[in-house]
Length: 350
Image (cartoon, rainbow, N blue to C red; front, top):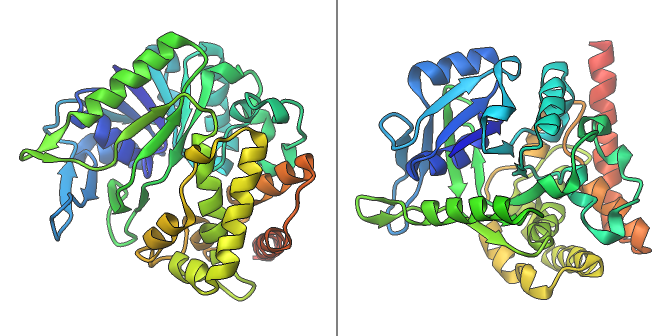
């Protein structure tokens, strides 16, 4: 198959898994990054079970072929599947927005691995079909023209980052968990997802299993399990005075963390999620012990960005729609609002 992935940073993790399984990938990115990837390929550092050190997996020599293009060069109609792996505010830039309009017109199935669920995916949830969620998105018009049944969400559970001292084609995976995808509406598109799932599962390196699988689920709500994690850890890395690691955000006040986590799980169940769709708090808290860096959202705010993915605002709005609220969530939204407003003010005066 041929897969177009928007975003060459986190997207290179999914790309590497697809390349190992024999599929071809095009990564959409800036011109300078595209030139680097086309010249040198990508490198993903991944720790196999039972090994102390990370493996360095280069795209060079893998069964599938990777290349990189700018948004202007990309032709979505030439691909079987589109994956969305950029930070949500990036889709509003002129070149990417134009590509998104062409993707919508192509009617190709789109699988998001963003933390922020695409609006068309949310419209597939009965309770959210008419919900006013526009202010949660940097530019909600990006999603005009997309058919809800052609857009699904894949929970981006694996934790990875681009080491700042490395080139832009290197990704380090800190927590090699699985991508959990909801099905599309068209059975043919789901058959394709299941084939990718099986192909990725069959991959080995030196006879060893390779972590980070693709798991396909019939339920729309499985990827929403990530919401509890994001609101308990990622967004609480943002404080009024700075940023803190995810581990500290979760374990600094473990009972408050449990209360937030369980409230978000309950909200997802109010939308239709089954408890079996969700990850127990104890399992998440254990995983958070190894998350020693602030979240990407927190790092972006610390770096002065004026916009980030606002999943915490989205969950707040969904709660309002269902008549649910949580003081700790309102406080998190207010802190993030304040820090972003500071960044916008500094950007305007700088």
